[in-house]
Length: 278
Image (cartoon, rainbow, N blue to C red):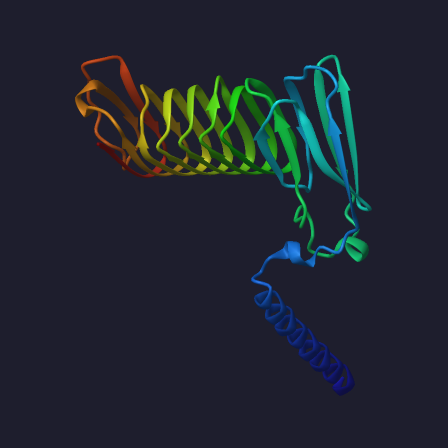
């Protein structure tokens, strides 16, 4: 019994020391898991031969940067723990990554944390569809005819992007829009953290279970915001008297009737919401 207790005590001590060493090591690299990435990368590039304006991308581990150019192309990487398939057919560029978790060769904590990224060049007015388990997307200064996403875990940053149509669906989604424009935008997620600054929309629909929403200096005609647990700070550029407010739930702004057909519709169970006009 005493021998067993000693073994357990030694094991616990070794475990505690291991945790301390790991925490110190991660602190040194700023908790940046991508710095643990030891996979072997081979750079590749693909330039579309035809006039392609529709792109479908499914990624599991690589971050993606999108920029605008004269022709659709992709700078990407082949790596020992992922297979990447690139195909151009019937005017559509398709990119699919099949990620293989290999903790000993690729790193124990490198699930979806790459030190390299894909770069997609699109033409003005392109249609882009994003799919995959993990989507880490950065897009600046592009005009899309249509952008759609269906992902499990999504981190998205849009800066000065114009959309003909914007539709995003995810389980866990962190999205930031700054200086963007769209007639209609729909964002749905179970757990959603959304920040919208200096944007213009005709209609915006935000729907989720747990929603943390910040709208700062946003121009819009119609806003629909629906969640079970809703934490929102809403700042709209416009005249408050023009907007009808329909609120269902506690902790929401008071209902009122506006002088135009502009509408703000709010719904939630557990709410902490502020609404102001500037």
